[in-house]
Every structure is written in C-alpha cells, then in structure tokens.
Length: 162
Image 1 (cartoon, rainbow, N blue to C red):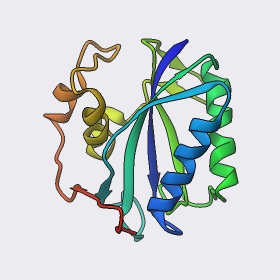
Image 2: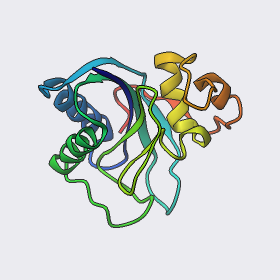
Image 3: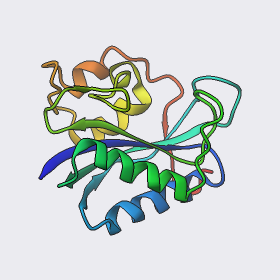
Image 4: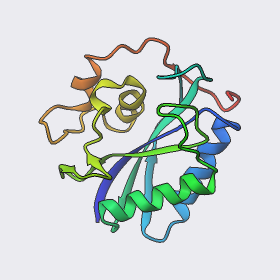
C-alpha cells in the first residue's frame, strides 16, 4: 500500500460542495483509503480572470499504481463535469497527485512529485496542515518549501465560502 498526498481545488459550481463530493468519491473507492484531509483555503487564481479557488489536500493509502490512481482521480473529475478548455482556467474540480510514497516519476501523463508544488503556497499550505515535516524526494520538507513561498491572499475558508 502506498501513501499518497493529493491536492484538491475548485472555483465553479459551489466549490465547497465540489470538494465534499470528491472526498466522498475517494472515501467510497474500493482501492483508496482516505486517511486525512486538511483545512480548506480560499486562494487567488493563477491564470485568466476567474473566481477564487477553494483548495485542500488529502492523505490517502492505496494499492493503485500511480497511473491507475491518476485514472481514478480523472474519473472523479469527469463525474463532476471537469472541463479542460483553458490552461489554468476555472474548473469544477482539480485533483492532482502531489506525492506517491517516495517515488520520482516523469512520464508524459504524470510527474511525481507534482512539478510546481514547491512554488505554490495554495498547495503547500494545506499540505502542511497534514504534515509540515513531510520529506520530499528532494530532501526538503513541506515546511522548508513553504518558507520560500508567499502566502498572500490565502485565507482559511469556512463552510459558507462559495
């Protein structure tokens, strides 16, 4: 069984509900065990003009291989009407594999650790909720990476945030 960390994000069609549905789908998956979920954060978007995101992170345990897990996450995105029209555009749901055990993978479909996670506070802040001392394959911890990122505009979200 692999220990996996994923990022969750949404900024369309009731983002809090989108994250709730995604977490429910993960918890119900026969080959995924949902271990922990971070706080949720309202974060400014990267890319074109669009609403703020609600972001979180989750810790999973799974027997699925990395690409099979990616397929499962993309099925959940599709169930929630994810459109891939605009790079860094608005979305109902975005599920990204951040870390999968201690492996390093760089394929056409999947890069682990996630390529830009070390530069993105909207990923690192929720990940630090789960384990700030988590060591990445690079030898750096989540806390060390976060120390080099601006947290500007990132605020804890409550359940009424849309």
